[in-house]
Length: 204
Ligand code: SF4
Ligand code: SF4
Image (cartoon, rainbow, N blue to C red; front, side, top):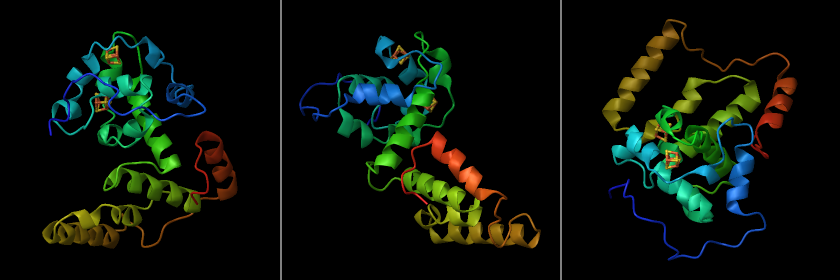
């Protein structure tokens, strides 16, 4: 599929009814961003044209199209899109948008939103990786690579897995990778702080 097909968003499937309009939910997600609201988008397509991932054909909807879908209330289709999970956070779209919209932050916001609501496309590594990361951080306050690696390692072929295991073993032998995850001091304070920043629900 040419993932960046710039076809217009048509109402072939009626957007679902919701108490809060989807575009308002997204606006709330971006409240801390210093960029302009997505309502100021003029659909010029600069973001899509400058995006290395969209032009590489990896995204099922281009950044421009995602914004059009949000504004049209296509919540389900947006949440099931792979666009924000493939975003490389390079910020090219954000710095080049003529309306000053922080599109990269929008991509982060959509990741948080779909993990929180557990409404994401099946088979993507990104949501599992993010959930595992948040749970690990809430348990120990630190990232621990061997646990994170389990979220994507099995998608590799056997030769790559063996290579990864050899690298991990060498790192452990050299003391660069701990055998067990470390735990920070005052973990409860840290957890309280995280809960203030992101709506993680019962992910612990
Ligand atoms: S570059 Fe900015 S104004 Fe143009 S389509 Fe993208 S978000 Fe909209
Ligand atoms: S930040 Fe994401 S959406 Fe924007 S240009 Fe880079 S990869 Fe594309």
